[in-house]
View 1 (tube, rainbow, N blue to C red):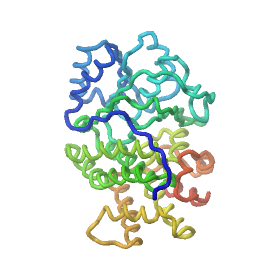
View 2 (cartoon, one colour; view 1 turned 60 degrees about the horizontal axis):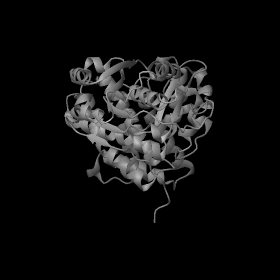
View 3 (cartoon, rainbow, N blue to C red; view 1 turned 90 degrees about the vertical axis):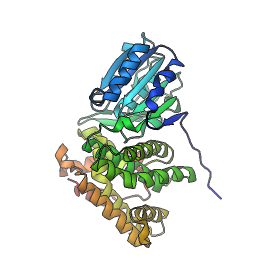
View 4 (cartoon, one colour; view 1 turned 90 degrees about the horizontal axis):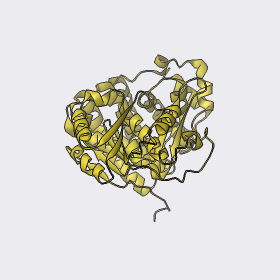
Length: 393
């Protein structure tokens, strides 16, 4: 018999090659005015996105904004004030996770004109969000954060007093999500690696989370089955449309699983690292995943040998070589070995390349995200966290 659980789903996902051609018809159901939010560069580099721009501008009254880097609260407040009088019928996000997060926040705040600082968790005014929202349509062009399927709009302020926090409400979820793998074909190997490691990390952490449920497990497992083979294939050959399709599928599932099961130590540490240093989120995940997984596994083997997450980690390890009929210890070694190979093959940078030093480690640990880290399968000691970070300096 299952334990009780709740599960938040998304309204409507349209998946497949060519599904972008549905976009004009979907928008017409809402009206004529569109606020388009894109990435700083990816949209303009894509011939397919140029065609989308032509179709949109010929059919609707469109205003466009670009997100360079990760979105910040000031950016959101400026755009809300700027476009409230325009009153778009739809906010449309076409881009990576940053564009989607910015669009979620703007769509949520346009009707009220409120500052996002009224609602930003941990650093805002603590108000409860209960306002109407502008309909959001999300069209991701990377396979990474899965932000299109989650209710979180993650915003950052980078620097000594920085933070990385969420504006979170179920009403922020997109009304329609178009997952067209052809739109991810222009991702560079570096972007494919960073985004893909983020997606895999989210699937793995939610799968072994203490809040995992039978439903989140089913989705996480389905994503893991795809990403194990698709990530190295997409990295090695960006034109592999099957690998791109599998990555986009797994990424979007990871947004659902993280929203319902939570994450773990990688994302707990990614929050202060991304706040204090200019490290892209996917790069943090790719840099830390092997060491964090090794730390979790060794901690459970030494002081919590019956933790069910060990068997789950082993099950994932068997995905890399299902024909070998590995026992649990062999499968755990396979998982760790393959994650280390991924880290090296995809050239995931060390934290020191972004200015992180030994002197920063205590502050990073002291400010680990309680929300993400709370669902790690085991509570790690400060020494374990210290050793994990130092191994990646």
